[in-house]
Image 1: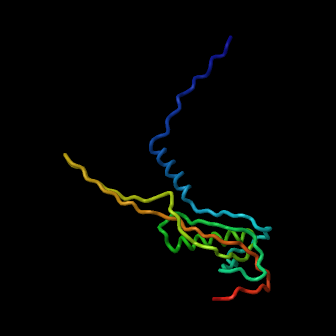
Image 2: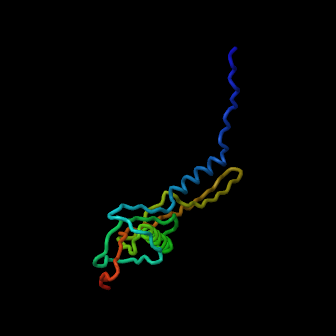
Image 3: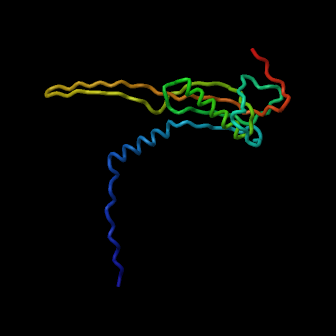
Length: 158
């Protein structure tokens, strides 16, 4: 006697609305903020991010820990985005035990996402439509996480 195979129900297709929602979610993840690092030295015990100082040039005697790069969330190129990218640098530096970040630069890059606003009108024999695209950007910040030992010489102020 042979066993008969169990009946297999046909697999239901993903509803169109759910498929669109999944695509939007994946696109949003592509535009999320983040931080990357390249280790240059040994990490130290973590410190409070509020104690991390931002420098234009490193103080004498500073020890390099890591090269950092961060991005803000997708937006319209505001100062808040720049502040968020620098705050991410400070948090990552603090997690590595750095009490300072030498800011190497801040810039913008085009985002993989955009915002469009459109409208249209349809009548019996004609159609009219219009759309406006609004570009979005991400702010990027790069810096070097450093440990400044107590008593290190502060850099000269300009």
